[in-house]
Amino acid sequence: MNAEPTAETTSRSRGDRASVSPPIAVFVLGGLGVLFFALPFVGLVVRAPWSSFDDILGDDGVRTALWLSLTTSLVTTAVAVLIGVPIAWLLARTNLPGRGFVRALCTLSMVLPPVVAGVALFLALGRRGVVGRPLDEAFGVSLPFTTASVVLAQLFVAMPFLVLTVEAALRALDPAGEQAARTLGASRAYVFWRVTLPSIRPAVVSGLVLTWARALGEFGATITFAGSFPGTTRTVPLATYLALENDPDQAILLSLVLVAVSFAVLVGLRERWVGAAFGARP
Image 1 (cartoon, one colour):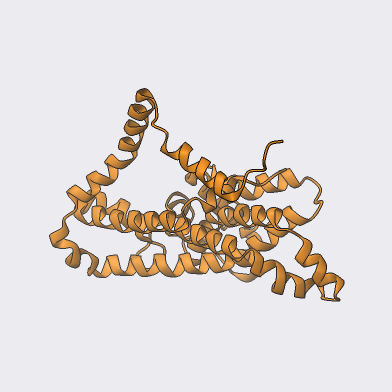
Image 2: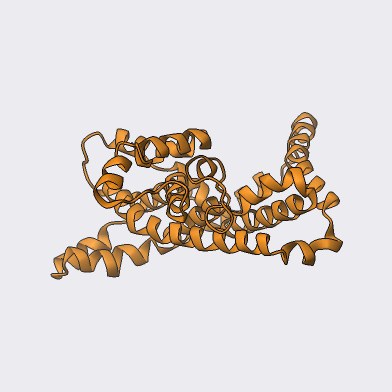
């Protein structure tokens, strides 16, 4: 009779697999792939005007863009958790008709060209849009080219990261604790806040950080739907793009700021979000 594998033997076998020397062809091709990803960032670091770092980041326009990016991305993240977690719960815990269609709809913006996302937002929420026209006529509310439109653009393209991550965590969660709490007389709301949510807290945090990082770097939908107005809609990605023509040094340093933030997020989360993002079952 074969003995059941223990945690120690499983860990040892994983270590053995990790230490196996790859074939030369795999090593060379893999190395070339890593080099392909690394070279653009090496170019940024080598060409960066480090001596002008303080002067460029101290510029009023740059500081305004940084502050606008920070505030709008944080607001986007807060709104995403209010809307995204309920969406994830509906997808994971209910027999929602057309659930696969709903999931695809709520995550479609992840794969859309950002400019297309901006055009779609403009046609829906613009002054002559499906929803924008009634808002403008009834309440005098015009969303495009305002700071609110920056948040909406960021939310549209970034919230799917939170939805997929939390949905996968809810599907993987053992329902025994929730059932025990319900058996003891706890209400649905109490179970959700005191049992379910604490159990999936790491996934929620991962989803929030990814949503924030994606919102911070949003460009295409923002420039299409919100435009680029200093102090109102010109975020760091837009300021970086505009600086390429007039001040390449500024563009390089702003690019490095965004790269550093994104890299820190991915290193901090390690591989946790990968399984969460693609582990949802139909």
